[in-house]
Length: 212
Image (cartoon, rainbow, N blue to C red):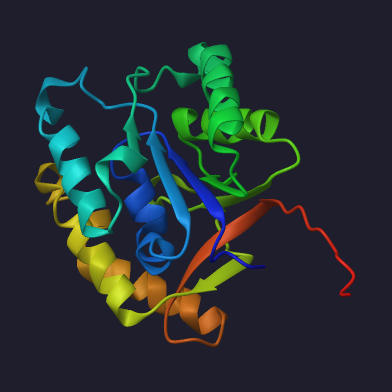
């Protein structure tokens, strides 16, 4: 599958989700693809998370995603199932305006209620579009990547640096740089490459063209 030169839409529930699942890939392709990153909850209902918004923008900037390509919305954390219709309508608008070739959402193995809602509504909103699922370590059960994308060491380093901007979560085990690097090495081993990021295949849409 060709990713370079495509319109790629990354949709996560909360600040940090996209970076945790796709940070190295984004750094690898952002110069050659049209990247749009959407986070549906800014998590600002929690007074302990007031710095997350700026941390998210700082993190995305390290990955090379400009502010106009980062959308941070205000759906209520842990209440996504109650807002299914509004989330679906939001995604339908994204489909109309951005027309992505590939959409990245949370893996179907994710047990967080907000993450699961995003994936289900994305399948409705982006019919006829390839949809791949990324892993957020702390909230998945039984994830195994069936779609592997080679990345470079500098991409892994950029992902680690981007995650380090989340001072709010500095003590969380899933922000440990050794875990991040080890995960990219493991996925690389599955692809017989030094490093890779792994996704599960939720839907793949292919077109075949005869050469002239």
